[in-house]
Length: 357
Figure 1 (cartoon, rainbow, N blue to C red):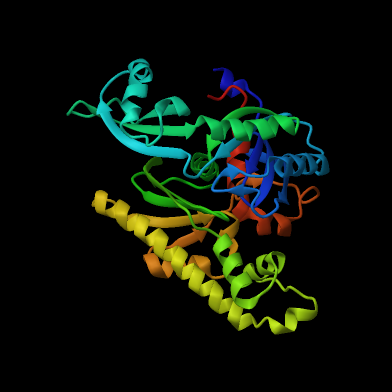
Figure 2 (cartoon, helix red, strand yellow):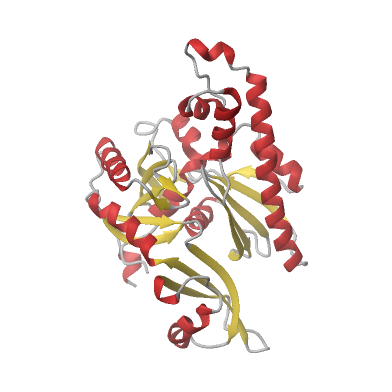
């Protein structure tokens, strides 16, 4: 198949607070990290997945690519948020060809957008249906205008968008090369970004349930700004346990910041618990064995512990570099450790190849 021979694409993750790029090279043992970097975006450049300041995003991609001396032009990117719908549905057993032909009509019942405004993709899950003549299908729909917005900023920055993935699936791909899937196990991949939390429940390695929650790490920043009257930049530094320095830093009481962080963490944990309760109510036989969290905001001190206590399931922060070879000559291990939680999508995208559907 052509896709096996295809060259790995550059993973380009345009997130709501930063742009990240990753380049991987397949080796006999697995993968080697060739390039990785990130650059922050101005606040409000992306709101709810929508590109509000396209020129700032183009500038950021160009600056990052130049600073990392990126040569490769073919990229894989991804989208998430409310313009993307992922649903597991049951359909009468049919061949992949028949499914392709009928999916437009079938999908209309499940998608809250006009079918002409979306790109639809489907994947038959496991085997060829059950005794009752039904089969499980994963339905993915994404708004065409959102895909066009993302691909046009990538083209404007001088790159060639070859694959548009979904964040949740990019993280799943990254997970599969770094961790061992236990047959029969149900686990959760939870991406905690700046403005959105995405939950992907995997059962036996395939998606059983997904949900987007419109809340994320920006909540910490906004609350810190509001309650102790500091700038956006200072609040961002305080959020991840940094020191703001400067003349006013004496006025910022660390206990006060800790209080704000723990109350926002409790809100986030409540929302995650509600989503998982909803999943559990619809599939009683499943016991979730572990929650893996990633995304830039998963680094907030103590958040993983708060989620673990609230949901009552072990929580671990994902490491996308866990089984990826990275030479210390080219990459500072401390930098990779620090950036790992936020690198999950970029690494997942860098696993895609030219010729992938």
